[in-house]
Length: 101
Image (cartoon, rainbow, N blue to C red; front, top):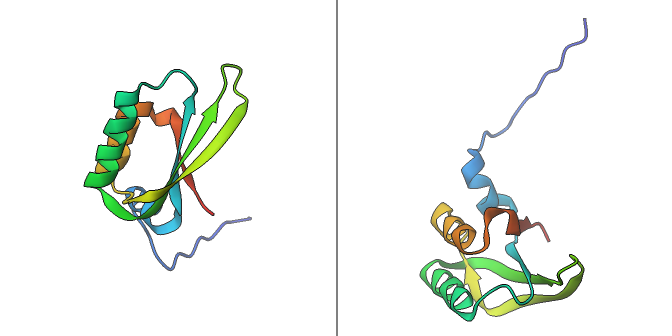
């Protein structure tokens, strides 16, 4: 019979994978829907959870077309659970993704 063997050098909890493999956090937003106070709250989260990872924003129009990408040149963040949850509360979990490059 055919069988599959998986041999692992290391087993990593899923919650630890962003900090090990991601290069940054991308936040996708639709133009004209994000209020200035939300951006200020995001800056506060970034300040509270400083780290080594880049933070990117992708801005889309109402039809879902990409308009512009921004990279935070000043703020670098930590990709811990608290930071991710904070950004998810502001922008929605579906609007967050990890970058690998």
